[in-house]
Image: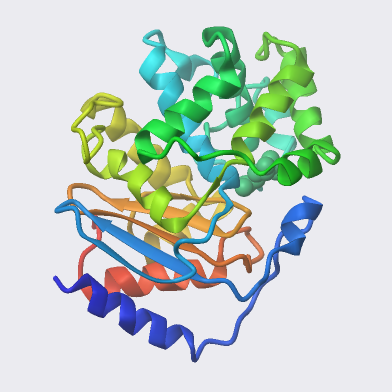
Length: 304
Ligand code: GLU
């Protein structure tokens, strides 16, 4: 398979597409990012790297960090963490409060905000230095110990996290948050504020394409039977209220973020990432989704 030729075809097609969608503005710092940016990087299981555009430029990974939080929690905790967070698609926006009220404070899945806040609560109870250990975890799977958070994005979100604070208060009233609300919120926002390039994210996501092991060192980050479950949750819950549409059009497990990034994998084949900050009404990168749809169409391969 000539992946570079396929990516070059997609790059050419993108030049004819009319940019649509909006940059996320509810976190003021994200509104400053240029809507013209576009990067794509494919990391193949045979170690090949293929890319185009702004694929080496860092962006805010936002909700893509929820995959790393879940992975760290599942690698550390052996009792059933899925009693506190379910694994069903929500059919609601990522920051919705409604479902939580009538489902007794148990979030639908770990990839909506409420679910990731519960995972953050679990990690705070488990780790000695949650922020440092979380960052080290992401640095390790990326083979890059210079990764860090964007402090401006972190502070910007901290000033306007009313809905996430509301989710925490509601869940605490149901007994599903054990730590201090401010501490959980702070740790959650920290994870979202990590900055990575498409290349770095594709390297990190190889773990999910490679049965839970790093491609570079073969270190097992998480067992194959746990990574199978994480990939299943990415497939069914990784794209806000549009996981069905993403499965239909692209056909790969993955996760998106409001920074405009999408990371996806084809098990035993590749990890692929795209970044384009213009979001569709459901919060997924408009052109990113298009590029991934073209990738699975032009390669003739998806998980289906
Ligand atoms: N930090 C963002 C929030 O909690 C993440 C949202 C996202 O990327 O889906 O609202």
